[in-house]
Image (tube, rainbow, N blue to C red; front, side, top):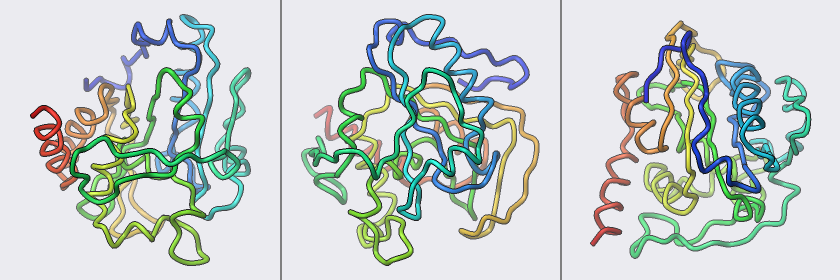
Length: 243
């Protein structure tokens, strides 16, 4: 689950070898390099290892927080992988999918790119980032799969229309509605800031966390000493689903 970064080697799960389409979701909504965004290095490692065991189509999918094209961000972050399909959320066909929870916490349906539903294996790859006392890990990374034009509150973009529901409840609902198979948090470095600005402190952490998204975020929360209330809400949802 938690690995020393210097010794980490990505070993694809057996399901990867049987997949036809694999989606990788980086954290690349803003044009700021690692450790704010997902590093090219960790993505390259994952892609290379997947290609060694699978002939599946590999898709990278992200949406810019501004609502504009994400391709300039891909370029600025060095995402120039061979035989990988790079897609922009805003250019996809969106479909409305139901939250499988009997009693959703905030949102009963989400609009998401249909390509997500057509993939056999879903991987979230995020940096180790904290803002104030909040962790921004693999499950929060799923937010930018939602089209900005559907969820923005103002002309500045973003997903502010969801704010009224309570973000922790929204993230819990996303976890159940978009069931990612694997999450990787690149904690070689930790980026921490006191607010939502892009100015913060970078420190060496030397860790990679890999596993199921809930478990990965739980480990990262404990490692960072921050608050992630959405994990408690997810636990409540799991109890309801099991009953």
